[in-house]
Structures are given as C-alpha cells and as structure tokens.
Image (cartoon, rainbow, N blue to C red; front, side, top):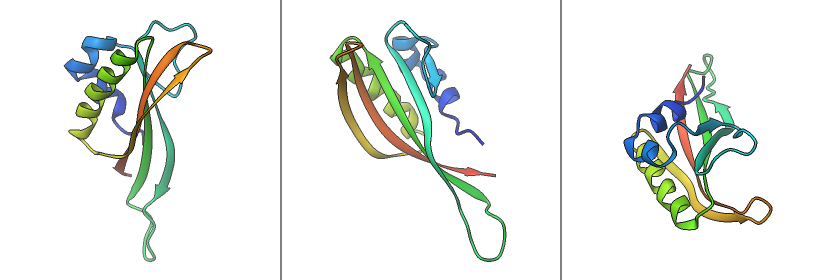
Length: 117
C-alpha cells in the first residue's frame, strides 16, 4: 500500500501555489523546472504479532523540497509540512542541504504512516 503523500500534497493549496503539479514519487524527471517535491518510502515494517498476520505496515517517508532559491525551498518545506501534519507526524527533521552540482537547495524531513493492509 502506498501512503497518501501524493494526493495530500496535490490537494494542499499552499503547496500547489508554489509547485503546481510538480510532486514526484522517488525521482523527478531530468532537468525538471524548480521548485518541486520528491517523496519516497524509505523504510517499511509490518506490525507483527504472535497470533495472526499483520494488520498494518509502518512506513517511513522522506520528503524533499527542491528549489534554486534557499528561502523558497524553506517556504515550500513549511507548506508541505503543514499539509502532511494534518494526516501524520514528522518523526525526523527538518534539515537543509545544498547540491553544488545542480545548484539546488533542499529542505527535507521524514514522516511516518501506519497503513492498514
């Protein structure tokens, strides 16, 4: 089961005001116009117990907000955070980074989804 990150972000007016529809799972297209958001499930573990099959999966999702402008990456990250926190919790971050090769600023965090099977 895929967590509802894509639909959550595309339904958030504050996010789409900055990126439009540029929200991607796992990887953005090469030479993508900035700013944009990339998200990926980075870990997933079943909710195991001793008596029956798991009823849920615990999925950790990393969300990266990219922009050529540091302030805009932060603003996008805050809009994404607000949209995601309406559904689940941030469990790590935020942190920021810069990629000299692409000249892109990144604002990132991890959140956690408990997905029923």
